[in-house]
Length: 79
Image (cartoon, rainbow, N blue to C red):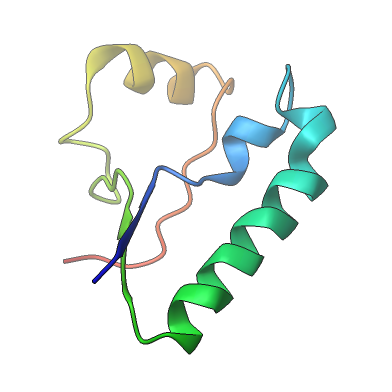
């Protein structure tokens, strides 16, 4: 049995810097890998960092970046 572990695949990492130029290539490669795992009924675990909508559970550095408009937080779901 195999396991695919995908950690913190968030759009923010691909906005600027070294990963921005590789965004399309990297995304296509990951999608192909995910499809291959699904075809073979292998397990996939997606890990991402999630905060409360009011950011009361975030760390200070991120909180300051959000308040200063340097970082946007999109809350997809609450648990």
